[in-house]
Structures are given as C-alpha cells and as structure tokens.
Length: 324
Image 1: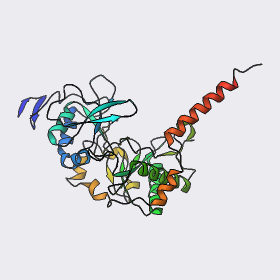
Image 2: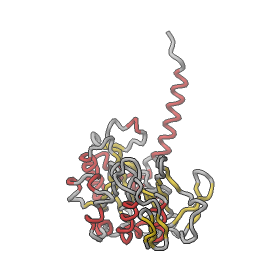
Image 3: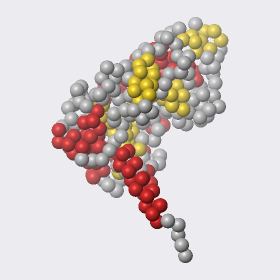
Image 4: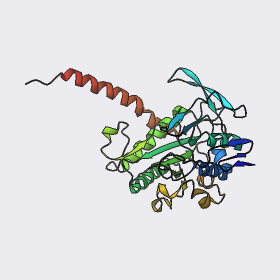
C-alpha cells in the first residue's frame, strides 16, 4: 500500500527514502535496490537460507561497512542465530535471511551486499561448497577467464566439476558442490590443492601468493574461502560503481561477458525468473582422498603469511640502520 511518493509498504515492511541515490556512483536509487531484490527473491533467498549472514550496508554520507552482529533495533520477525567467533572470542548474533519480509527489511536498511556463511545452521562443521576466488590485479577480465579455466582444468584432474559466476567486482568465483558429511578441514585442504594445481598449469599468469606484494602482478587464486569465511552470494548486488550483481555464467559464455554487464537494473531481464545458478551447479561431489592429502601438505595461506611477515620484520630489525 503506497503511503507517499518516497515510501511504501511491502510484506508488512515499511520502506522509506526510496528515491534517494543508493550510493555515489551507483547510478541507481534505493528503490532500484528494493525492486531488484524483490524481483529475484525466489532465486536469491534459497542461496541465503539458514546461513549466518553478513551484509555490507551503505548509509547516506558514510563509507560502506560490513555488519555481522544484528543491530539492537532488529525486528522480532528476523530469525537469528548465535555463532562463536574464535577470532574475537565472543558470540556473534547473525541474521538468517529465509523469507521475503527479512530480505525487504535488509533492503530498507541499505544492505547492498550479502555474504552468507559457507555452512548452514545445524551443520557447523561441514561446508557444502569448495570455492576458488579469482582475484585479478586490475580490471582486465580476460585474465580472469584464463585463470577460471585453469581452475576448471585443475578440478577435472581430480574428477571434480564446478560452476562459475562473476564476483560482481572484477573477478570470478568457482563453486564445487560437496556431498554432506565432509569436514571443513578437508574442504580447506582440497581447495589449497586445486589452487596449487591451477597455478602450476600457468605460473606466468596465476599465483597462490597470499601477500599482495608477492604476486608480481599475477591473478590471485584465493584458496582461503573455507571454514569460517564468507563469500558474496550469487545474485547479490555489490557496492560498486553501477551497482553490479554477482551473476552466474556458463563456462562457454565466460569469455564473452564482463562483470559490468550484470547490474540490479539489467539482471532481472536477463534471468526472466530462471534460476541460472541452480541450473549451472553440478551434483554434490565427494572430495578424493589423494586431493585432500595433497592439500594437507600445503601450508594454510594466512598462517604462512603471518609467519613470513614476522620473519621479514625480524630480518629488518637485525639489519639495523644503514651506516656510512
């Protein structure tokens, strides 16, 4: 029921300031965000359901920020779950976006990006996707396509297959559905192994170096999207110029698209109600034991980078000030 030109109500959610710019450079209004999320809700909500959700909000006149803990004014109809955060040694109360009403409430809160956990409520030790995040050094998407095909070849060498989507920023994500009952530790090890195999296929193009300064201008094959990590969901908008969307792309179409092709204004018409992400995902798969063992021998990137940083710091201290 409309209440004013700049406000309305949907699914018992009061939506306000709809005609304001979404953010600088978005080329879209808050209404455009609401309309997009509502238009794709039957495709988007299943991607988020029962997953502890972090969002990136863009409030008027402020820089984007990530929200994990739900705010105190969160309405009672928004389901929540408490998750222990080892890094901060505290419980975090996450929202679960399981229905239209919750999604519209998030849209009204100017939640632009949606980053669900890799695990579902009730299965805290078993992630259901292996994910490779392909991060280029610049905006050239051709190198992303090449790197994604390297990942696909590495997966094939292990008897696995995945689906690809644009990240909505400048890169891409490759998702491999996993059978239930496989541990996060094994999934993380397998992810490292796939990244290393892909790197070996074209070391002049791709790298697994976690420290940016060590990448030498190559495409980063990020194997850290495991365990307690999150990744932007398929169909999620991004807080980027033009308000692009993380969009499923067929392997045979990847070379012919660019991330900017898919925005909150263009995506609904391209989808026409079809769940392109669900259609692209292969069946859930079992991780081969030899792939897991291979990955177990590869140091965890964040830990290795931390130790290397400490080593370099010690080396600088031991060098002392220059003399002469």
